[in-house]
Image (cartoon, rainbow, N blue to C red; front, side, top):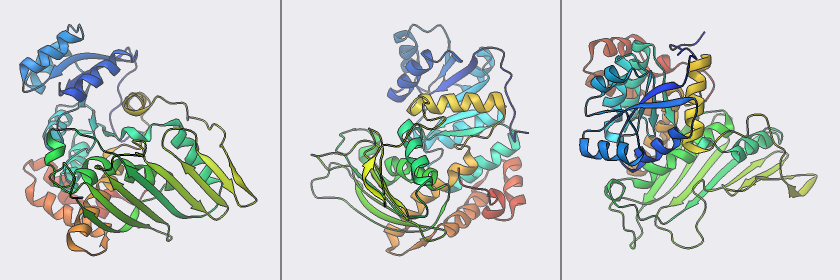
Length: 378
């Protein structure tokens, strides 16, 4: 049985979208091309922006600045949260306690402590809270994972990420723009490839003198996984010329050979007895839709079947802990144990929680490790 309420498959899933900015508009277009989902409401504190987004797309839907009122007026069955990261905790919590499942843009919350609060809110509500960790949804990544599983023990996984985007807006002002806003995609993909969670991280960050970001836009991190596998991430968001793909460039070194992926094309595998390299064959489930469309499809499937998705907040908190651990390591210049990051965040979550029912669940855990359990990585 599912640990969350299922939604009967009696027609398209009726959803309310919270956030009408650029990313919200991208979700509106994608939802329009998804037969199993129907947008019935749009929420934004900037009402003019929301009405404009609805008009641009020819939508006759409920528009408002209050999630509760739009949900009540639209008959929504689920919420998609595309607000700025600082609003995720409040919006997700409100939606869950209104009795609705939520699909939220990453990061699911700005901190591990707020994410633990959301896990407790999910448990209180009995509803699903899933992260749109959209860069997991590439068929080539699924084929890379399958190829790696056939190469024996994994020694080293590396990601190189070098881009030079000029976003403007909040990213330019973030203290750790690369680590917090982008690296989580690669960190999450590493957990997916290895079916495991890391135990330690050692990270250094810096900002090249030509950077147009206020915060540090470059970093290098080494994660150790149980069993000794190392994952190394090197990246920069102010690196013009010979840029990598948005997924980065990957290499996996195993006992029986190696695999590489440029983040766009097909992965290449070179075995010890056949080192020249071949492309892996397709694997079941590797033809899913990409990025946010793939995340939405998995969300709908989870609500219909009761199968817990890998983006459930219980699992995704470990990807966020990788980010928070990397930031802490860079700030202190020392290796950080990720279990300590989770336990410290648990104490913060207990202290800050304002909702009695959520605090009671947190307190009942006794520790982050007890609350999260010891299941396999997702």
